[in-house]
Length: 532
Image (cartoon, rainbow, N blue to C red; front, side, top):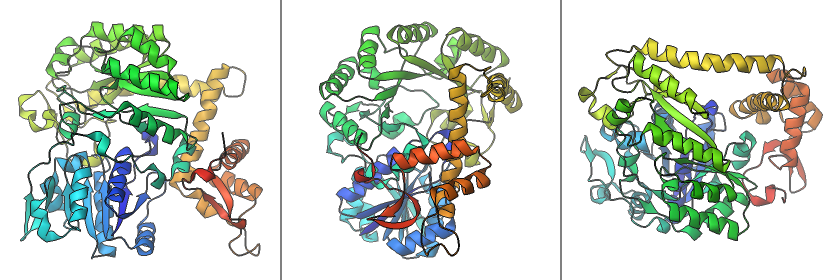
């Protein structure tokens, strides 16, 4: 059986890591015996014609997609397009959004055959064992499907007790060279589960309240596998990794024992960190921690069931500074009961921390308490247009705060940052900036150029030789750079430096087995990554 797993488009400006959920899903299909490919449209341009071409070439029996709320409409539309191109294919969707909107999704998209709800690995195994036979679907837990003209939602599946039984994520099926070109870290998880009850979060319902841990050797095996691709930055995406002090120390000790050197970051709760553990983490390569603080108003923190205090926030930031770890605090604007006064308190508190901080705007995702019990809160949800659930613009109001006021608060904060940034851009290369500021501006220009390389398929479009220069031959490096400069209006030296860097690192090549061909992004084979 052939299975195509779709990674649907996601804004590059939102700094997407290689999609961990997609890699776990692909690994589950591989383990169940399927010939599996990932159709990644995050770091490649999505078009209907490209999807058709890849479907016609691979001829899958099953096409699956996962998504979050923001890119759910496009993910569903891709599956609908796959069904139109190949009516016999089985279309499957999973992920946090459809796990809580399964019936509505099947009703809205008749081209989608099946929804996998919650953790999908064991459900995938059962579906593969049954060869996706419709007669077997009533016996498989954790799915929704159509039968006799109506939508059926089966009993939920228990959470997977032994995470070590899962295969490692199939990152080798992802276009890792493109992700490495972006420079974003790769995410891993060391466990699943969260006992906390934050009313704006889906996590507890998606992964359960009981902590389930992967074994320390297996976690570090995965880290070593990631590093073998030439990747040198990892993010530990668990909600509670730092909370388990003994286990954190075991992971750090195993990293040091194996002599693995890389930079890494993690998410943490302010009420669970301690100085000694942070120092151990720093020694093992951790350089930054992100804390979800959410509000500077104690009543607001109690209302959303965050379970932390402002003093704990101050202490966590101080301990990070003492350990030499960068602390970042994240706040949510527009929570239930939010008012101009609570925003003022949050702003005052955030600026007093002496840490990096930023704001997201509340997005009441399906599956969250805040959405399902909205009538109990001082909150009004204004739209179900899922494309607006990006946490960048207000889609709610409270009795004392309009969406315009929510947006204005965040816009004012970002405007202050932007004013300083525009000064740095204006002074770039003039000697007025510090060396660090010039480095940041140069990195920004490079990132914007790489966004266009990836999202517009510029290497594929511009990497061929000119007419009369040989069928299927590559453009010269000089011609490729000149074309890219003309297409993107980027600085010529920046383009040349970037392209030369990608060639040196093995991300871009113009030959296979000694045969010249148009410039292309390498896939993932370790042989494509030069030693060191």
